[in-house]
Length: 378
Ligand SMILES: *Cc1c(COP(=O)(O)O)cnc(C)c1O
Image (cartoon, rainbow, N blue to C red; front, side, top):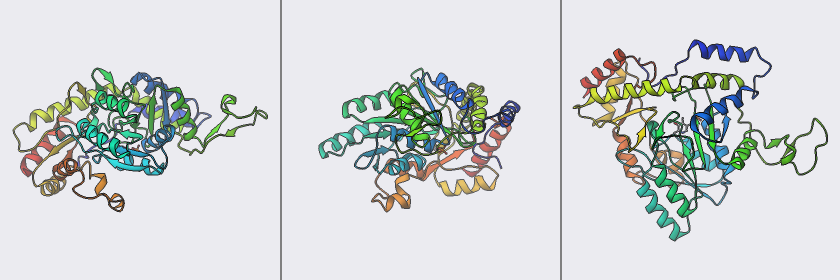
């Protein structure tokens, strides 16, 4: 079976993890800050806070922005469930903004309409999470303009998009957002097995995310409400979790960062090759928004008779997948008042969507097999 995505682990990666296993630190030690510095440097962001998953990073990002009961978080239905769940973790109400039918990304025009209505009804969101679906950035300048006008905060869910560029700037520089979150799950662009990271340019947000990541406990006298009682002393100044990344994960991530440019370049080459080979077939190919260099986490196509095509591809050994079942149609969200018909663009896209294999190690022969099987199925 050719999978839809998979990690690429080299000898350097294995050596880096083994070195850490022989060192003094297994949980968060000196390698985690080196990994954070590497990602911050790649993104041109002032701060980076690593965590044990992107879900955790999104959660501490919401906590740092003060999201709580009585607040609202908006995201898109075309995402993984985690982008919405973090609002529930914080006791906030969650709502969704429909996607653009061409790019499958949060549609700034729909966001503007919904904000206009929410302003009149007194239901404006505190946090909006646009998702850089499939690896390309949302229109962050437009979303940032709306954030200033309506006074909400922005967390980019860039789980798919490390190494991507938008208007010639790296995704993660937070030029139009408060915080940007990456995932290092094995199917994503680089991996730490499980892992995630948040970038920000705001030192206060970085500090709050660091506290939330580690029990709300600090040894920094500047953060304590009275002076230290001795070398053993720490204070718990807020409620936090144990969301720390291990040294093994950070070492793997640091080593993978060395190949980020290669990973993204190869994915772009393969996506271009799909574009050329699929031209003329009865399917909709993915479209990039203006001035986007995608990290190409996914290559989503739309076809008629999706269930049959999907089944036939799987039967021919092609590990296709579907991204995403619209979040608001999940039983959990239907029990909270959402239902089919609420976000018709995301639903119409989902009804025809298939993600075909795309990953660093996919060979051209594999890719030819995928296209052949797809041609047969269509
Ligand atoms: C993978 C993913 C997440 C969650 O990432 P984890 O690191 O597995 O917690 C969140 N949002 C999106 C869009 C994702 O693809």
